[in-house]
Structure formats: structure tokens, C-alpha cells
Length: 205
Ligand SMILES: *[C@@H]1O[C@H](CO)[C@@H](O)[C@H](O)[C@H]1NC(C)=O
Image (cartoon, rainbow, N blue to C red; front, side, top):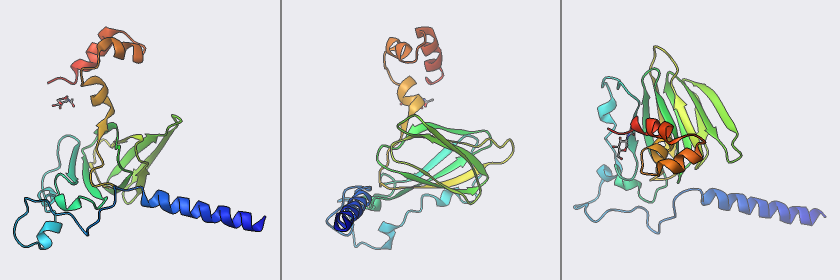
């Protein structure tokens, strides 16, 4: 009985370790990956991303803005299973419901406050009002959002991702800003084609 429990516990730990180690991008067989177009001797510059410097001291954007440091912007991240995004929310702005197919997201509120939430696979909504200094995790692949409901103050957050290329699928955009047939959408949303057309018209242009 006791040894059965021991075996079960060991298996559970092994499974947990496997789950954790498989949570990121596939492992690479080298310390890092240098793209072929990077010439000359490698130094610290390759491992440095300066693209966020432009945010320092710049005026706050008038609409919600994401600035990414993922593999596309920062090639040294290839194979490292990490990336960042800086999220700027002027008052009243929203980051609409979306998913990241390849990563969990760890959001850190640096300034202001944010209403956040995600929906799990049983369709249960988890929400929170975050204040400056709070950290919230959005589990991998689940639909989530952030909203700055403050009438006066902007909010600033930094998100870390467990992938160099987390990917973003915007729910409104993928549903209403592609050429999915209006009738399919009308049936899916239990409404009529005119309503679908009206929603779609807000996305074009
Ligand atoms: C709709 O899709 C087009 C083409 O991908 C894009 O340029 C535009 O920004 C999208 N509209 C909205 C409101 O996201």
C-alpha cells in the first residue's frame, strides 16, 4: 500500500516535471540560434533589444498599443521560450478578447489599474481588478482581455510569454474581419445576416 503510494507520487512528480519542461518552445541543441544574416563577430548587441527605448519619455498613445519584443523583433529569442510585450492603455481602452496559441502570459501592472479576465474550457469566466504592482497569469490558449476602466488615468503593463513566438488570435478580428460567410456567422451567432454585416462594417477600413 505504502509502496504503491510512493510509486504513484513518483509518477506524479515525473509527470509534473515533464509538463513543466514541455510548456515552452521545443528545446534547441545549441546555446542559442544566430540567423544566417547576422554577420561579423557575435557580441552582447545580438542579445540586446533596444526597441523599447522609444517608449521612454514618449507621449502616451491615444489608443491601446502593444509593443512586442518577440522573435520577429528580437531574433536572439529564437529557441529561448520567452518574449515580452509592453501594453499601454489610455483611459477607457480595451485589449479585445484574444488568445495566444503557443504561450501562457504573465501580466505585471506597472502603472494604473486594469480589469482583466479569461474564460476556461468549461466556459467559466475568471475576472480580477488589478492595481499597480499586481501580477496576473492568463493560462495558455484561453480567451482573455484587459480593460482600463479608469476615466482619467492611463495604465501600463508588461507581459511575459512562455514562447518566443506566442502568437495572437483576436476573437473579433478572426470572426468578423475575415471572409467567413455571413450566413455561417448569422447561424453561429443566432442572429441575421444584416446584423453580421453591421458588425463587419466596423472592421473594414
Ligand atoms: C481588418 O483586417 C485588415 C487586414 O488584415 C487590417 O488591416 C485591419 O486593421 C483590420 N481591422 C481591424 C479593426 O482590426
